[in-house]
Every structure is written in C-alpha cells, then in structure tokens.
Image (cartoon, rainbow, N blue to C red; front, side):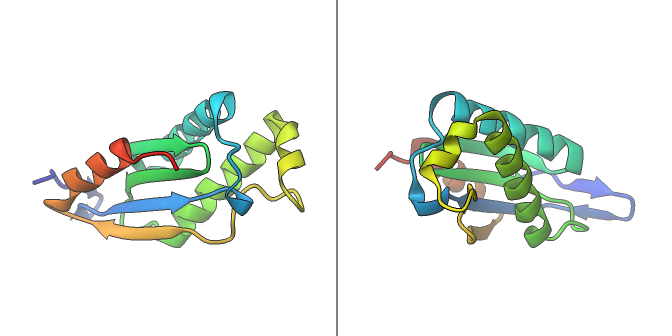
Length: 133
C-alpha cells in the first residue's frame, strides 16, 4: 500500500496514468528531443507540485504515472504539461515544425486512468516494459 501524501488539511493518494502523443503520432520524441521532454516534464512537476512516479518517453507517445494533490484537476495538469512541453520543445528544436502541420506538437486528446492500491505496480511495470511499435 502506498503511503498517503498530505496537504494543509487533507491526506491523499491520487495517481493517474496519462498518455499523450505528438500530432499524427509522428516519431519525433527520440534522442535529444525525448530526453529533453523528460527533463521538462520533471521540472514542471517540481514547480507545480506533481509527483512523477514513472515516466517513459517513446518516439511517438508519452506515458506518465503521476500523483496530483486534490487541489489540481487532471485537466489542469495535462494542459500544463502539454502546453509547456510543446512551447519549450518547439523553441529549442525548431526542426520539429517540419514534421507537423499548423505548428502544434501534441494531439488535442489524451488518455487518463486513475490508479490506486495494488494496481500501481502493474501500471509501473506496463509503462517500463511496453514494446515500441
């Protein structure tokens, strides 16, 4: 069982498995771009109070198992993660724009599942061992 985190007036254990991808599922997150994406996600998490549990950046998508405090909605967290990573990666790697139409890095959508208790280890294992297409 995972330990509870705490805030001023609450204790919680809120984990989410997030998945999002570049537009057209382009394989643009490899090499330096992928490593930089990881660094940006980790920095965003520290700044906004998210706790990264497991993170894997594949060439055509990102898996993130993250714990969020109850004051932060999942919509707010994914919007923050996607917008800051896109802005930073497009500034630092302008060649990415050649692979994308309209200059947007990410698809509009994302997948999210809440995860708790015994399922945490299963999700961690899935993220780390998922095979590339």
